[in-house]
Length: 432
Image (cartoon, rainbow, N blue to C red; front, side, top):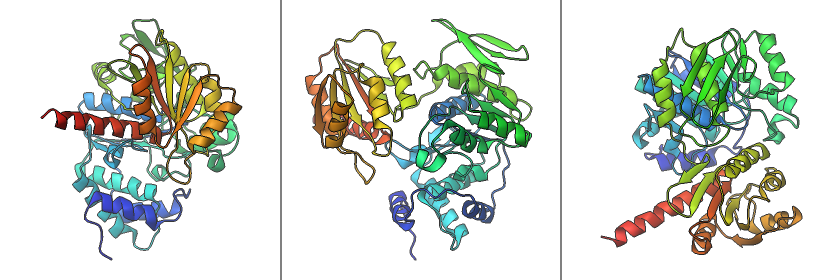
């Protein structure tokens, strides 16, 4: 078979090759990993959890880069380009680097079937090995115990939060989901939990395998006022006078404290000076996580797609101050707890502009409108074919002092961002 020569070609091939987008289990991935022949030669962090994974990975990457390390970061999903998933030394991997890595995995896999995510995970690992990075951060795609990234051995594992999501795969209770998340822990290796109320199953699993577990609020934590915050460890270490991370949101101190705990835990093999932590927190960037765009009306982008994330978004919106009207651009996947998300935000929004999302999992605008009415939403509601179309309509109606909140699925935020990019390019071309 002739292999694709472009990144788009590879992604198209991987999308159609395997009939299951999710196939939990590690045996196949482990076989191809071994065939690749890239042994672990540097410290590895694995980051799992229901919400907060992306922010925690971004904070950790920024800190390690500020400390002078060459860092490989693998995350998912992406917003606009697949390249966002694989970062080397703080930049997105190039098309050529990714194509070379995909080819390497293809040669190594033989007749072993791999899903899109599994092939991409191994390709990221190959790209990091080729680049000779000095630290690797791997974000769990789904769950933890049976996720493809778990074929690698973490020197430190971080679980950010445990809430109800992906219940078809992970179980219907926090206890069941907590056990799956705890599957990234390793015997004798530091385990960090940023959830201050973890399920007992997570605590029990860490104890059963002998993973030294640090839990937020018990073994480490934070305190702060409007101007600065402090980090503490139970054994007495305290760092005060910290500036708030550049990522906005009331929950970011949970993530930042977990990153500081992780840095403390791996200090013997990957020392990070305090100045690097301060600098990394100041410079970190992550699109789509309570991202407030410059200009008026205020525009907030947030990939809140489950009730826990919606609750955090609600708190963050409440802290923004007064806006005469709040407009929502909203789109969700049908297999999510859409009613749970709406119930937490329905009193925060005055005007709902909902959109159909593509694909078999996408919920239609008509379906969203019916659900909003069932939830007793009082604001006016209108449907659109795409999130970008909904956003364009809102921009025409919203007053300068209003607020626009684009939230829900990654697909919702991505479509609006892509529309903004096209609009900006048109404006630039028109000005020439």
